[in-house]
Length: 342
Image (cartoon, rainbow, N blue to C red):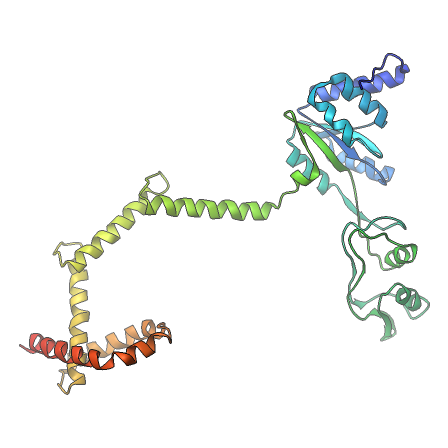
């Protein structure tokens, strides 16, 4: 049901008009929760936001009046004006605003009755306290404290309050003494209206590192797809041509096509095969000249690292076909010997 301001005092009408102007002059308008923020912290936040965003404190009823008078889809923001709310106006997008507000938050001590935003953990290690009643106070709230070397020491890391649980007075007092400040204090964005859409915090929390990794992975996969599918682009044409050259060179070597760019590769392959034949001949009792033996030994050493990468699963198969391979080696060795020694 629409609310109107004709019955409001002038100062309230002025407040409503100011909110309406803020909505009209900015591309983004949001509702923030200011509960529990000390006045000094509010001033600090205002200074940090100066030039980027403007915060307007107002009663929830006046915020509702202003939203209703503006009308349209922005009215949906009134559902988020709860507690100690304020309006925020900016021309940034909601993701940047959310990140900016998160950066303005500071750590403060917990108060009794507050809800733990995350697991509250007391780390192990020495403290600055001398032996005294503090040991019993810590032990009463489940913190394993002991006296060691004339100082109070926390013997092991302890989670004293889990996320979502209420912080008791005793635990709050213990945390203050240990200088542990678990509470994030700052403007909490309840909702942001931007380009006819209402964004809630759950939509604005982004793991930037994960997104960056996903973008990098997508770029790599797109590059590979372009190269392998031969889809030329300014970024991949070089890799596509390089791949084609390598494949063409391989075909030339395998088919022994004597072109100037691959003749050295063909000769090198022939050299390796010749040395393989020489080693096979030597294994069957033929003597090799010193130069051939030296070259064959060098080739064997160079091939050793590649041989060590073979899996153990391949060994049984080799043993099963040993006789067949022996016969093949004898045949190839005799033929190679004739070619090698005339």
